[in-house]
Amino acid sequence: MTPQTLTVDLGTRSYPIVIGTGLLDSAFDLSPAMPGNTCLVVSNETVAPLYLEKLRKCLPGIKQSSVLLPDGESHKTLLTAESILDELVESRAARDATVVALGGGVVGDIAGFAAACYMRGIAFIQVPTTLLAQVDSSVGGKTGVNHPGGKNLIGAFHQPQIVLIDTDTLSTLPDRELSAGLAEVIKYGAIVDPDFFTWIETNIHALLNRDPEALIYAIRRSCEIKARIVQEDERESGRRALLNFGHTFGHAIENSLGYGEWLHGEAVAAGMSMAARLSGIDEADQDRLKALLDAAGLPSSPPPVGSAQLRAVMDMDKKVKAGKLRFVLLRSLGDAFITEKYDELALQEILGMADE
Image 1 (cartoon, rainbow, N blue to C red):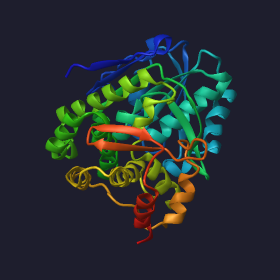
Image 2: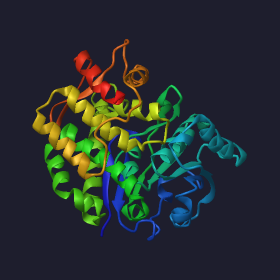
Image 3: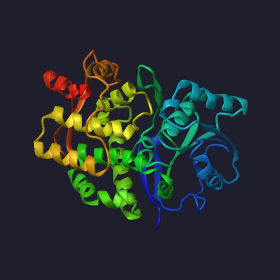
Image 4: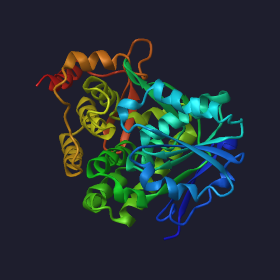
């Protein structure tokens, strides 16, 4: 199957997203995207045994070193990022060095953040191996780490040189993580593309069964939507905030449970259902969203962490401005908007689901 290429058009910071099967096995050449001839590959203890040697063949003529991180959201910290920076310093990496992220969203976020910090910014490349990373976190240049007070509170915008998406890596992805990635796919349909939402409803079982054509279409369409929004608003001063649908609730759930207890996509799924209720959209649309989340094996309500706890964490959310929470809400499925105006009583009632 011939690889498909999209471009995130950001002027001098533009970069391609290459999507296909067998890209690592065929030793897709990443070296033209690198400014120099040295790189540090950042992966984790789960992904590296599966794909690191294949990735090495995609870097012909490049002097390579690597660092393996512990696996899981609980390790998305400044301390972990520091271990990458230590390796860059110890290897005397110059400004033309490249950081290559091989793994899921946690690896990509930490590696990109380290690359953004080292010498005030060196090149990095994303090779995402989870569905969530392929459709969301590897595209758009958001990098960062968590803080006990909130998710992704420490970070930087730093665009990659290229995003290489080999869908064959999804064959080794646990079912739970595949479902978590589908939450972000569903999000794109819910916020801007009702036809895509309908396509997901029709093809959800093909996606869960890892049908290659269905996966490639879902990944490409998700990346197209995100690329278009990022091109319009790279640093989230306006429209890009639509991509946070479900995330205000979702991030609060992750923090309240303890990072890693629920996967990011699971928390976002519950958050989308909660945001749809707060939106007050037709019950038929709410039911469609819930049914699709159920079909994908995702939660549609929060865990019992307590409404007061959720609200306290939400008040530290990055989207708070002038002391006011901002939500991404829906007029209908496929039509989202950003607002500071919401029904406080309805919000309290929805948060109360976490008291049960």
